[in-house]
Length: 86
Image (cartoon, rainbow, N blue to C red):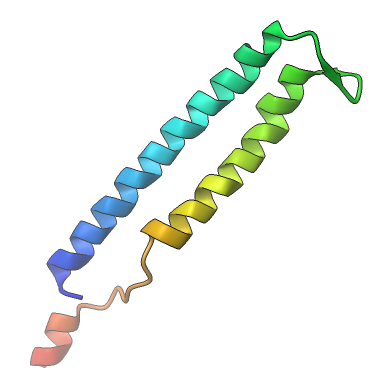
């Protein structure tokens, strides 16, 4: 990869990571405040405590798996253009 291609890939990865963070925050808000309206208990805890803590961990794991499978790319950090020219 050229230096420009690496830079564009890094920008793409950073942008999608920011989007994943935004999705995780929105999920946390909906899972916490949205589920607070429900009168449901899980293991003697209100549903919102479970969804806003454990649910967020599972959502984060899912988002990281999606990022690493479809967005992130393994690339050398060495400058290949310099290596070619000596």
